[in-house]
Image (cartoon, rainbow, N blue to C red; front, side, top):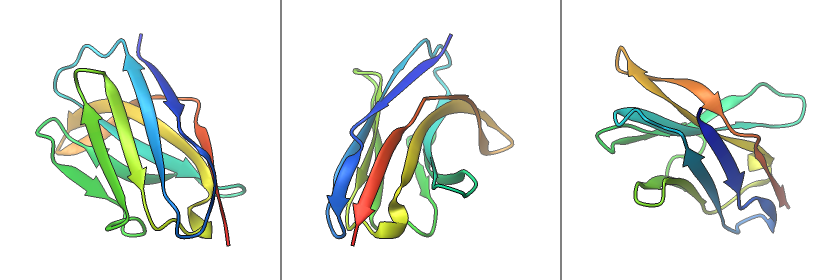
Amino acid sequence: QVQLVESGGGSVQAGGSLRLSCAASGITNSRGCMGWFRQAAGKQREWVSNVHPDRSTSYAGSVKGRFTISQDNAKNTLYLQMNALKPEDSAMYFCAAGYMAGGFCQHNAWGQGTQVTVSS
């Protein structure tokens, strides 16, 4: 059973930085993919970033150039470095794990989320 536990959220002023972590356990697929999603209050969950089995990465346009996804396989941990944060980045951030299908990451396991609040 896959378990994902996020940490590192908090409150920060606009322009600041945060690093989110996601501790993963129970992942047996060595060719799996992982990613981050976020959901702001009253809005739908939106995809933020993925890292693929070949270690390539992809980002939503709204965060590209400001956020960096990475993973430490030895520690079974996924990270999201968030720089130049904006108030519109405020949301609950979720870690997700999945598998590649048709060239896309199909997420099928989710963490409980960590809250990020950016004040202006």
